[in-house]
Image (cartoon, rainbow, N blue to C red; front, side, top):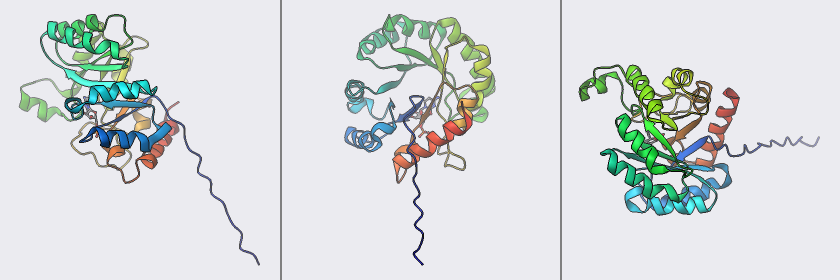
Length: 243
Ligand code: C5P
């Protein structure tokens, strides 16, 4: 009797712009290779401190020219006048998101700097690698969650477009921000995934369910043996739990 052949077809899940893949890689060539490998399965990329000093900004412009969404994670932290001028330099490039640290004055300076461009100003609340103990060591005497919510209130007052937070705080933030306010969450891991130095983490689907508008995933994609498969698993998790 002929052996029955069972054909298994795995459907490719299409890109979701809410997923920003962080290009934390040693060279522009490595970043370009990862983007090529991921092809049309990822449309949003974050460029941060590892690539910026070695041509990351120019590479971001290259991605924008290819139709990708780009998040410049510059974490601008300086006096307001300088942050305003730095934002003004970045605004015409066509990126979607830019991070800024600091007091409400500094956040408001970034908002002035972006003018009428499409660039959205994102205030960093508390890095997802910091927990209560680490904050105490730095001299902050508020618990991580309390400090995050304090910074969110300041961010709203300063007129920024959104905040960066851990997925664990997204639900409380969503409940206090105006409609359309962005809540972007790094610290995203697949169930059982290696946390690395991240402390306040959740899965992709639960981050969105908690109220994140976008998620950032770095090492679980860039360090995967098969980054495309890693993206597919993340997209499946996003869609299984979120709407
Ligand atoms: O590799 P992993 O998924 O932990 O990468 C998270 C990315 O998000 C890193 O590029 C990190 O710099 C960034 N990030 C963060 N926490 C913030 C803001 C940005 O982890 N609060």
